[in-house]
Amino acid sequence: MTQSRCAAHPADQAVDTCSRCGNFLCLGCVLKLDGRVYCGECVKRVATEKQPASKLSSWALGLSGLGLLAACIAPFAVASLLGLILGIVVLRQVSQGLVASDGRARAIAAVVAGALGLVAGGISGAYFYFSRLP
Image 1 (spheres, rainbow, N blue to C red):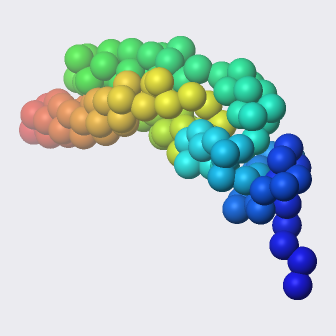
Image 2: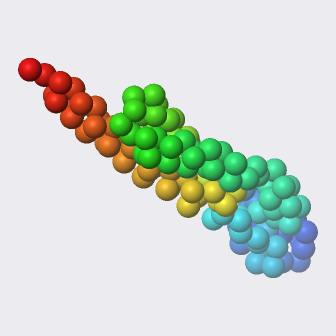
């Protein structure tokens, strides 16, 4: 049975493969980024390819916060919903390793604020509706 050898160090036995290019890697070549194994060249490429999540997560948090603060006015319930959805999108992208994890905390806050905004909007809407009934 043949043992796989490291692509960069043929004298060394491979212990893993790069998740991007598939090259065999010895223990000295294994680099981990966001839970995945890469070779030296691919880790550089992956690190520079990732887009920061901070901008999208900031929008998500802003929309959710706006909706939460003004939950009694109907148009702001839409802001809560949009913030909630954007927060979920950012969290999913971070978990899949498609974007950097720098916006994860803001995305979680956006999901929570968006959900609270929707609940508060529903409660205030129901209150105003039922308070006007004869």
